[in-house]
Length: 158
Image 1 (cartoon, rainbow, N blue to C red):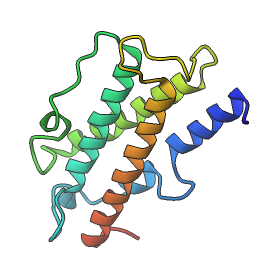
Image 2: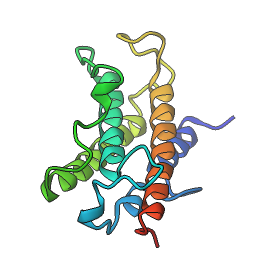
Image 3: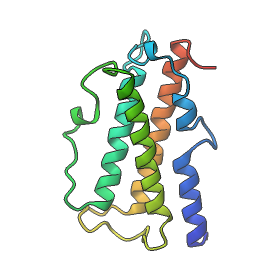
């Protein structure tokens, strides 16, 4: 059985990605601005919609994990942006920065020795930090794959 430090490191590696698939930075790197709001034929979402969905969901999980007064967005509409395209370049950049910051904050929470990964979150319904970290990693990996596929369909993947 892995020790506490080993488990934390495995979780951090999983959250940061890149082991078995593209990581977040690679998935958003050099995506031309004119393609960020495009939905390729047959795709349900644009890169902007995927990015914002990932940001909102990750933020919600993080805030739920650390704030007993947090109110989640309405499901499912509150987890998706209102527009297919970012309103401007700044919106895309702001979303990317916010995603990275929330991921760092979640990683800090997981890495902190004071965090009991197995303890139930007091305001939750049986959830633990371990479960929330795994949920985030799983959700992010799914949508990173979706983002890579959309980029391929748009001709914007290496």
